[in-house]
Every structure is written in structure tokens, then in C-alpha cells.
Length: 233
Length: 366
Image (cartoon, rainbow over all chains, first blue to last red; front, top):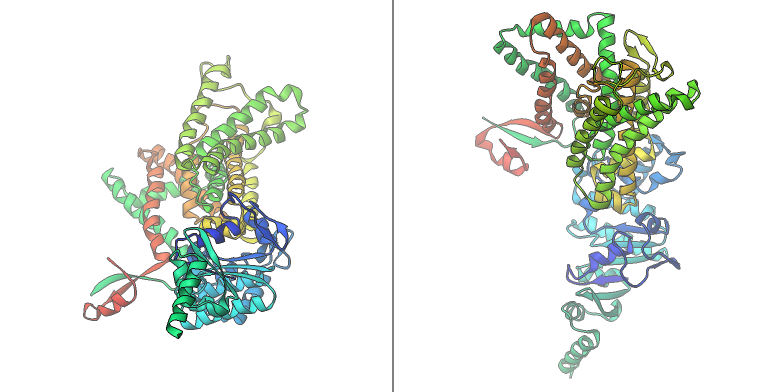
């Protein structure tokens, strides 16, 4: 599932409400069939939600802690990383090395502070942590924004792989090509409202663009297909 | 030639150790100029201070006496600072802990078996200190009230409250006009082991070691670290920030409260004028100079106590103001703050003809 829209139309807020960072004012949130409306961020994480936040440096990592520690920031709550509240530094290192290998995070050592990595490698660190701990739902806000080609590719592939594994992936993006190639369905948001849901197979960039500027789905369809027909005839 | 600050690629461990030591040396040099203004020989003065604080076992026990409350308050402040909660109220938490200890020691003793009096004194004293730190923590987490101001102002409330008690309601009628309560029953005395040095020292060392393990090897410490370094990210990752702040501050206050308990039960055996010699404020220097490392904090507390005792010595032997020790303590902070820059930056010499190198590396020019 993809969410399209011009930034500032409520997409980030949507992801932060789902992940429990903001209160739900009306409506409800169901995760894996369970009602999780207005539960704590921890309860929502436990119910299986992973989150790749929009602001990766401010919300996704602790820059002054090591890559290894950042990688276990979900896993530190459970065995085998912790036993009776005590952390096992060797297991943290083992886990971190495995993640660094499989997600190809370029870091001098696992003990390097995350803030010294490049944006792409910071994002890969977040991705590794969130994917590894994912319990069925992945909420990703602008996951490839500002990344180089290689990192973007890695992020997109990982999204698709998660979907193929049967997880629900909510991808918020401004990059329409990304949405069209990765998402099955796309919801367009405008001023906090959904403008309608499209199948990415028969949605075009122009159609999404119209809806992103506030044209309703039916009107956009008429205009899009209408003009299409006109030129076709 | 031109000097520039270049951002390091990794945090320098060497700088973390060297900066506090160099800061201390710079502080000695700066204070040396002040001593010369007093027409005193800096080297002789420092020598006298050192001998006064560490020169003999009996002098050293006096240093340990002053180091004990500094360890407690220093560790307490360390926990709060780890969360970037600027608790500068250790002084008030210490005093309030001392008041509560006096209350139990003086007024509960008829109702308690003798063996349970001291543990009860310590427990209630810790709870009082925890409460005194818990109030600003609650205000911060519920209403987002600035903690620096609240903790600072609560110092005065606690100090004046204590004064009100030992000048008024709790004043010993047979005390010859000296402001202080009656002597505590002996069951409430914390045992001494040499001179005035008491077992509070071992409790403080034990807590210091325990705290190091808690901060570096437990889930709790991991969460404190996350909150202190990026509160927003901690919240995103499911850490309960408010509860952690509250719990950490209760512990922080309890430790400062314990400093007050040990002062009244082991040193003065009563609540009286001069309960604290600024231990709660010096604790800030202890925490900062130890770089929030509890084990380093134990040693720094001994060093700071040495400056206090040594300051007293130079007053007696050389006629210099005892505040010399405090001046030295204060002087350490400035080079320390300046020096902490070097943990993340390094000085680099560059040739102005090649100044394009400087521009390309995102440097901070001086």
C-alpha cells in the first residue's frame, strides 16, 4: 500500500498516529486484527509494527551511540540480547555483525557512532533493525528520500521483499515512480483527507498528480481518461 | 599558517580521558596567578594543600569524610545528567534527606526496636531526598516545567525549612544557644571506622560500582542512554520516556538524600548549622569532570574533597582564604567545557595557499 501526496498534507502525521506517537482523535487502528487505538508506542511495536520514520536522524537513530547499539534498539528488550535485565555485549556484537553483513552497511567498525555514517548507511541501519524485528506491518515514511542510487535500490528491494513475505507495507512517498513500481495500491492524500484509492497497475503519474493537487478521484478519472480518449480518437 | 578545527571521524577516547586531567592542570595554573596576587608561592601552596589532604592517614580520613557525601551527590547528579535532566538541586535533596533522618532518629526511637532505627533512618532519609527530586521531575514530565529553575529554588526551601527546625521547633533546649537539635540516640549513629571516616564511604563505593553496571550493562541503562542522547528517537522506539525520567530522578534524589543521612548520623549526630558545605553544588563538578562515569566519579569525589580539606589547611598554615580550594574547583570547569570540544574536533594546521582543503572538509574556522 502506498500513500502519495505533496509533503505536508498529513502523511507524516498518519504514520506517527499509527505508530502511537500521536493520540487518535477519532477512528480506530487495528493491527493484525487487534484493536490498538491509542495504545503506547511500545504496545504497538509489540503488536508487530515496524517504523521507518520520516526524519531518520532525529527519530530513527541515536547518533551518539554505536552502530551495534542502534541495531539492537528493538532487540535489546528480549533474549538472547538480554537475560534478566542484563545486556550481553557479545551477543549485541554478533547480532550487529550479522546485520552489517546482510544489509551491507558500510561502517568502519560496529562500535562507530552512527552519526559518522553517511545518510544511506544510517538508513540501512534503521532498515536492518526494523525489518529484523518486523512482526507483520512495516510503516515507512519517505524511506528513500535523499539517498544515493544504491541505497535507494536497497530500500525499495527490501520493501518488495517484505510484501512478498506477506507483511503489510505502508509506504509514504513523494516519488511517484517509486510508488508506482513498489506499491500495489496507492491512496492519495490531500489536506489530511484521502482523495481515493487506485490500483498502481492502471494509475498514471498524471492521474496521481491531479489527485495530489486536490482533484477528487472521479473527476480526475474523467479528466485523465477523457482527455486520453479525446487524443485517441 | 592557519589553525582550523576539523571534525573527528570518531569520538576520541584519548580526549575523554585527557581533557579532565588537562583541565585540572590548567586550573592549577590559573589559580596560581591568583595566589601570586596574594603574594603566596603557588607551588608551596599546592604542596601544603596536597599534604593537608593526603599527607597522612589522619588527614586522608578527613578527605574521605568529605568525599563520602560528594560521592553520593555526585552519583545522584550523574544519573539525572545522563538523561539531560539538569538537576542542580542535590543540595536541597541532601538537606531534606538530613531533616527526615533527624525526624526519625529523634522522634521515632521510642517506638522502634534499637536494631531497626538506623535502617529506618536511612530509608526515610532516602525517600525524602527522592521526594525532593520527584517534585521537579513530575512538574517536568506532566507540565513541562523547566527543571533547572525548580530544582534550584527547591534548594532554598529545604535549607530554610531545616534552619526553621533547628532554630525553632527542634532546637535543643540544653544546647547553650547553639542552633541544633538534641543528640541522636546512639542506635541511630552510622559507625565510624577511622577518625571521623565512616561506613557511608563503603556504601557510596558500592553504589558507584553498582551504578556503573546498571548504566552500562542493563536494559535500564540502555534506555537512559537512548533518552539522554536522543529523546525523540527513544520515544519512537517504544521507550517510556516520562516513566524513565521519573524513576531516574527518584533514584538521583534518594542518593543525595543518603548524603544528608550519612552526614547527620555519622558526623554531627544531630541536625545542625553547617550540615552541607556545598556538597550538592560540588556534585555538579564531580559529575561533569567524571564525564558521567560513576566509577570515575568516585575518584573525582576524593579529589574534590582533597581540595576542600587542603583549602582548610592552607588557611590554617599560610593564612590564605580557605576558599582557595573552592576557587580551584570552580576553575576546573572552564577548561573542561572548552576542552570537551576536542573529543569531537581536532586542531589542524593548514597552509592558506591550500585553503580549498579547508572549505571542502566542513570545518569550523577559528
